[in-house]
Length: 351
Length: 276
Image (cartoon, rainbow over all chains, first blue to last red):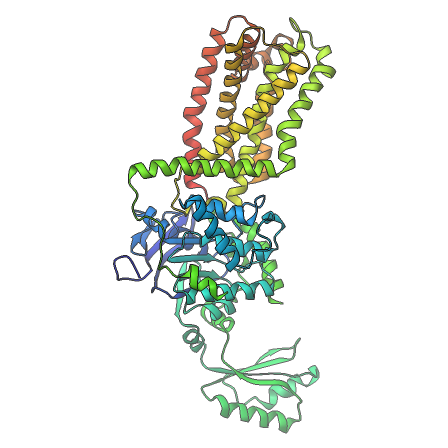
């Protein structure tokens, strides 16, 4: 599918970028095969957006190189721009114009003829379920509709490689699921996708391969399964409805787990790592709890979540790195406020 | 949603030519600029508030100075003849607030990022902005001139000088537009851009010969007002409209405007390239 028939769709080697004193990227390597989805996962300020901006020719790296469809993003920027689409963190649409006008103008800027630009716009409006609202000003669209329009705009030129920078940040849960469906169908259609996210479940849902970035460095690479494997096995988890019996429950399962059980006193959720002893451990837990006469709900054996992974890899949870959000040098002031807003939205979407 | 995958996801049918020659690129630069111009004018027509600021506000200034303040300002001849060239220049300068604000907004919303990541002519965003805003400015200038005529202003010096006066006002506006475009892209924040605009556009328009004869100002202020481009441009316009010596102030105006283009156009282009 590539122009010369070989090599990955995206290749990044030793990418370094600083903004003044701030080292946003400290030497990143990536390789994304054609037709696959790479999830770039990291907290605010990890360097995700900087990487996307370099790959989409908006920023020049200080060192290292990046190829998209075999073209160097610095020396062959024009060729790169012909093969990519970009949908950024905010809806980059002209709000005063209608959805249709937005797409037609983008089509014209891709040098489609007027009739072709019109038919392409109509096609995309239909595909993205925006036909009913097509002739209303985009400022009257819901947040989810605006993001869909923005994504449609990034597809006008039929890109081989699509960059989605936090495609669901700030969306309500329902719009978020809708966006996931769209992204899945794009991937199924053969488009190579690089998507950044701070939502661990999003990377898990959508990405073939995940790269975890923290403070400008790749700290882990692998499939979601491989990353979960790093945390070391399964977790038995259950809820104790009667909070006063939580301590009894912990005592009852004391010998089953590897290490101390993880207890959330507020919700009564108890989790314990059981390594590779899965179902055997589950039975022991049931026996122990039954013996102690502790009533539980939702007892289950689960694979560790990417939240567990992030904690294990970085020593800090993904949501607790607000201070790194401002470490972006020139762009920091603008982005810091946006980050605060998106954090709020993230909290809302998660709840 | 399966249609998405079938029709747009597949990279099977790239519709874009691979490597355009210089001639094609030149054609694209023109058509891209026209597309952006068209988009900007559409936005202007869609937002009633923009129309109010670019049309109603200047007209109110004309009426205010003609009928309220004007009687108290002694000038040689009729005040309305003194006033209209000044108002036109003020109108043109104020219109560039819109240039700076629009660019700052596009920067913030990521519109400029999207356009810069596309295979379109890089010059088109800035060029389209300047063309659209200058067109908008010309419309305003013609309206204000028309209203001026209605309240007693007259061209006494023939048709060609009258046209030259309108052209000079428009070129002046384009020059100020370049400065505003640069501030919009360099500052990149709507509110700050607006505040900064007030700091320089207000003084250069009001501390000039626009509304009052400079000799009525205190000496230190006269030194500034007598030697700044807005005064040269207004004096030239008055001479073109009413008759009188044009040359001295015309050359100074041309020199100033050329200087503004030479300095600020490259600065704006650079700010656009680096915009983030």
